[in-house]
Length: 162
Length: 158
Image (cartoon, rainbow over all chains, first blue to last red; front, top):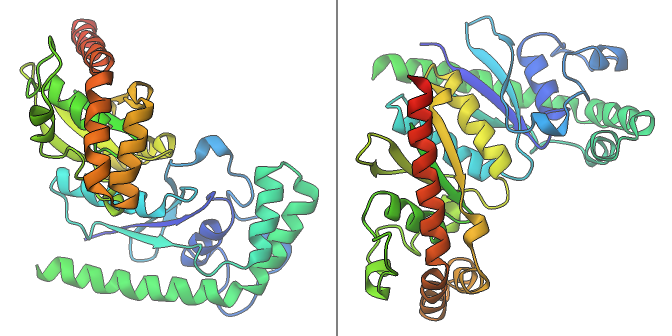
């Protein structure tokens, strides 16, 4: 069974984008990427307020799982409840979707830069700050993606045995 | 269609609207306190449950009625609902969202806050119930508008 993995964060512009890119091998796991590598990943610091709530498909990983990003402001718990109840209503397995909070390991610098760039529209100052913050917390993102990939493998096993 | 009545907590305004829609509560008169309090969801949804889509039943024209407490994030949650429904291969164009928040009055706000957020059910519940009775005509009106919209949709799709 193939999963749908959703990395979610405040605005789906920085942390979920980076986590999804690492997951899909668009960014390396073994070293900290350059600024231009980060800037060139799709959706990075591009998401607009009207996109919040819409899951975007970023790619399909080597095992065939679809990888999405989702911006949900501060509504993480509500989004989790909602997705669980949708799957239940349509009688789908609760393990069809793996929801991952990509914001837990974010550097405060990225938060400030992101607010400047996406919230206030000061891109020239905000964007470099977000990149600096992402680089500083990059090992945390790699660790998160590794955990998620292990978890996905476990869920596939559980799904096929049940 | 699937009709989602949504409000702040999904505990007062939208369950009452859904109950009117499903004829559990009368549309032509203001119900008694007892009738309101006997609704399954009324003043029952805990804050940690906010965001849960709750199916309540099917009306006599075959529409399925839901309740959703979305706090102030209804814009985001409704997009998540459509996006995820589509993602799992189900029909995302089948939804009609009805915002019940404009019907909420100050008594429902105060009573709801005391009962749900602070946990003072004993004080909050009588206040919010009184508020619902005052807001009842406007909620019943919203439901009747929703019913006509559903009928128009049906005619339009033929």
